[in-house]
Image 1 (cartoon, rainbow, N blue to C red):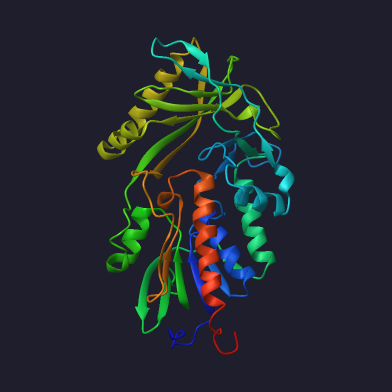
Image 2: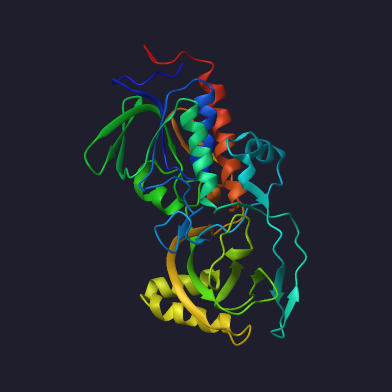
Length: 347
């Protein structure tokens, strides 16, 4: 039988990363009665489900900088969302979808799956998942930058930038592949590919009205454009706030050469090909690890002997739903394994 942590341990599991995958894994562990600590360096949970406002006021117009929507292809994901507190915020996005054809014209696009958004911004998904973890008895610490992990006997020691150390029998790493590889070093599994592609994101205010709310740009520069004002719960305001996502290769070259500002100008020019548009830049974000570079992935990774596990969209084909399924499936497996052995003394 695998030994429990042989050092004073407060936690059965430490989860590094409070994105969708990490929170899904943590929820299953907490519901199984395990003590769980979730750590994230960001100020808020949610990862790339990121929403900002144009001003500090709570009623100021908002925009999604990262993930723009999610699907509900798997019944487990759909049922989990319905069970979350505030489930009413997860609503069908009824925006009109278009695509730029080879001749440059804009044509309607038939959606292959229903697309859902969070009324009030995509970060509501992270808030809801985090709220469920905490309500079930887990602990979440944001603004905590983990800088080192080490295996000591049968225990993982996790150290943050302030020198604070936490110990657990199980370590769940739920951050993007390149960051997971850097943090774990020699412990990173050879069977997993950490490679991910970047995405430059830009939000612009558009005074003109376009015929579509979400556009597949099919352009060497731009991949996607979406009108945040078309999403449920948006307060509106002067000019629609559009989020532009650049193509992976274009984003990678801009980041590698340091020409990000020049890339932003190119993104504006590419968007103006849709017509004579009056554009005002509002915000930018460089997502260095936006999508998995490879479509084939194991879903999640677990080494029972080492008490190490990894999850994330990069291990499950990308997408918000893929991230949740990765964390959920891993959490279920860890919870089932934990049920076969006693917890730490006094735990």
